Image (cartoon, rainbow, N blue to C red; front, side, top):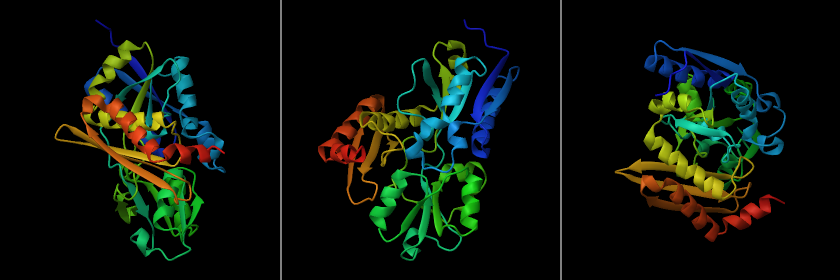
Length: 310
């Protein structure tokens, strides 16, 4: 039988949202193991430091993960808490995802001080987003809008909206809800109109491979239904070599022991978009994700992706 450690350390980015997520996991662990000391190691990542370029241009969301993995590697931390949508589809050798938390609201949020919906925005309005996935779907619906890059933590993005740099911004609803900022949401966008990012709304807990003692501690934090949905979504993205440099999304739900998943790939301007759906057994989540990717390729996703690389 594994002897549980007396103290464990959680690595986290230092943004308000990341620290909320780390404290959430810390609180759950302390409830489960009241005699264990659970500490948080706050870190600044490369992705937090470079704010003047779109993520797609500087290397993608993996920039929010690397420093935390280094802390796991050298023993400064025992686990790292990430937003699942920031975790690269292929983890480096020697690391694994030990648990997936229950999903918060996975939808995109329309945030504006003057308008209630995307449809209300006048032609030529400036909309802020850091995501090619959101940009492509916005442009497909409203090609008359002007999309501008929006980087920084949640508070920074909201401040830029309040300073009238944008008529509206699009954010993940989950982050706003977790920080108690639901009142800033003008409207939630239906997932059929803005297919969420892979893993959006879920938390990923990453550990160093071989840390069976930590994996055992984290097992009660895993939410099987969310894990199956996220595995299917990540399998689709992985099969298509997806990253935040590619406008794609996938969203899976489970009803009556059946996974239903929708995915899409688009050109950045939204003029070319392919969508597909699959259904199946949650136990076959990885296979379902691959099957969805194959359906998208059959519709031309590979041609769109090839053009994005040039």
